[in-house]
Length: 120
Image 1 (tube, helix red, strand yellow):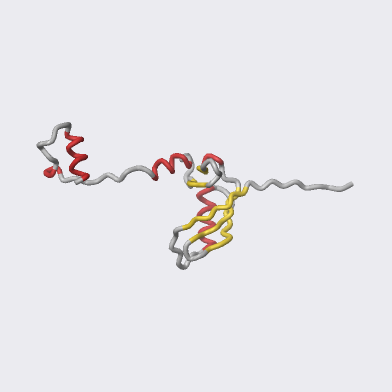
Image 2 (spheres, one colour; image 1 turned 90 degrees about the horizontal axis):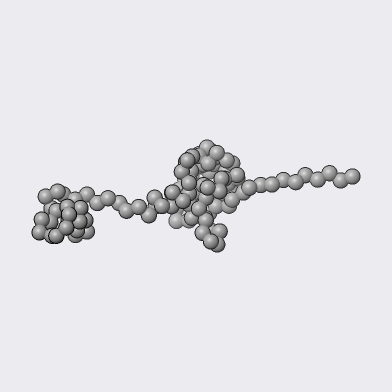
């Protein structure tokens, strides 16, 4: 009689482009990401501008994929989903405006005048 072992690996392969990598310690990065994701991470490739890694057992809520399965975001923090991370990436930066520079002659509330001053 033959014995069989069936193994299941919930593995995601991630490649991050657009980085400037100089003097990366892959072991330290693996430990950091493993701790943050609460799963195993293995760096499998590093170039001057990208990192490729295997990530095991990541909760689906931590990963935001498009309809083609392309990963756009991975949440590294417990309680924050990848969708929320992606939403935060589109938030606008608040622009400081000097109170004395808010136009007084425009119609509208102070908030609308403030918005006009911020865009000038």
